Amino acid sequence: MTTKQRTELDAASERATAAGIEVMGHGHMKGTNNRVFLVPSQRDENHWHIVRLVGCRLVCDCEASTRGRICVHRASAHMELTVEAARKEADARVVESELERESAKAIRDAANDRRDADRWELIEAGNW
Ligand SMILES: [Zn+2]
Image (cartoon, rainbow, N blue to C red; front, top):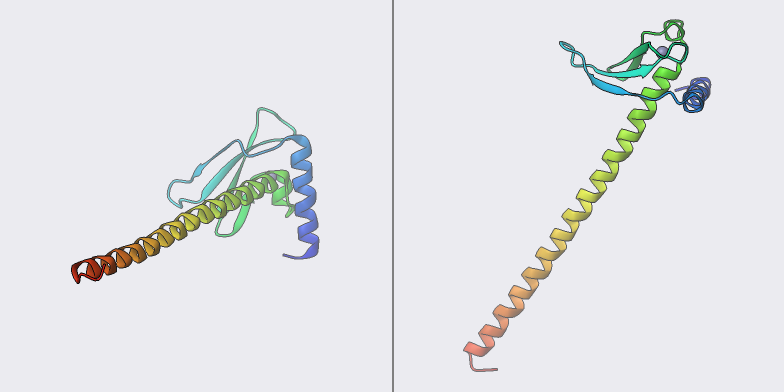
């Protein structure tokens, strides 16, 4: 991504946030299974734009997007994907933390079992 594109994405994200434009629905296309995001139009409150995720590209059906601009709809879908990725990363950290906790407990339990076994050996050998 070039600096100009980043700037245009930032500007589009700021316009979307300022106008309260955000993804209001999502799903998948039949057949291609591409993800789709439903984003309200800025000009017409009764109109919605469909943003499709095709591979790594966000494709919007609005006029600005067909002229190659980063529209508020694509910026909104991008923000949605960014939040979703952050949530998944946070979930992965929680899962990782739980796995590490379980592993540490298993190691402690194994050490305790070994100490118990040593004690039983001493007791059984009469060296208590
Ligand atoms: Zn658009």
